[in-house]
Amino acid sequence: MTERVLSGKKNGMLMMFLFILAYLAGIALLFAGIARLGGVAIAVGVIWAALGWIPFLGLKVLGPQEALVLTLFGKYYGTLKDAGFYYVNPFCTAVNPAAGTRLRQSGDVDGGEPKSATAAAIMTASGIPTSQSVQEMTRKKISLKVMTLNNARQKINDILGNPVEIGIAVMWRVDDTAKAVFNVDNYKEYLSLQCDSALRDIVRLYPYDVAEGVDTTGDGQADDGSLRGSSTIVAERIKNQIQEKVAEAGLTILDARITYLAYAPEIAAAMLQRQQASAVVAARKLIVDGAVGMVEMALDRLNENQVVELDEERKAAMVSNLLVVLCGNSEAQPIVNTGSLY
Image (tube, rainbow, N blue to C red; front, side, top):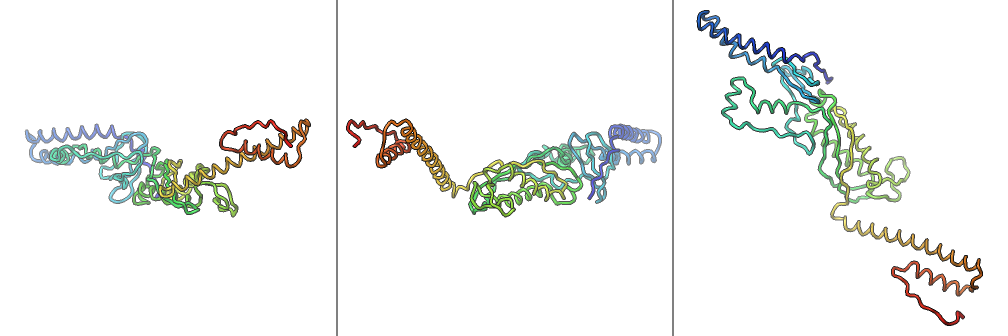
């Protein structure tokens, strides 16, 4: 289905004035027929007064970044896309299968009900647009603005089998209204489903944190990709996969961002302990490396300046004492030795 934009129909103001004049002329003809012209004038006036509201149905008003997809007797008639006051065939029907869809996204506005059903029925019968009909027309319009879809968080197993909870926000817009309306049943639900599917497909390729021997790019070599450390790359891959799926629906994905990432509650405590243990080990390793360097520097300085000559046994005792002082969790208590070393 190819989009056909109706660009030469922006003459709604002129047509509205003509219809108003014609309607007033029909009413005047009716009264004139009653007064002196006879039955033919009365018949014409009655018919026009009863059916003269039909041309008004062809008047369409569009605001900035709005579109209206129209069908005529079941066939695609065209799309109104530019802001303005239009007049089209009054028998055209606006189509938007996603008008009543409510997702966790921007642009979803609840439609209201008329305050009085009796008043609404009278206004409808007389051809006067009711608030409900106006709201229905508003709902039939397709927004061309940039929309934000924030799907619910999902629980997905990463490549190591650890369950993680993750949520994404997708920025998108409708580019081809004909494809969005006619190629899929409901383009909002279709987009939401493709977001969930792409999220699951990509997250399963990554570990939550950096892990050894894991290939996340598919090139056959282990890398350091992870959900936590490579969130930008993960989001880009999710965006590209969603775009491939929704191109047939006339949608364009502008951006995708990870909005929430955490271990599932059932393993969160265990993973926290594991991270704490890894942090302790890394800190201890750094402390030991620094302490050994300081001991080596102390021995070299003592030998260089010939401050004292120590045999191997005394060197070992000195190294032991220095490592205890430097690597201990608490401050060392100094002991003054007033005797001989030997």
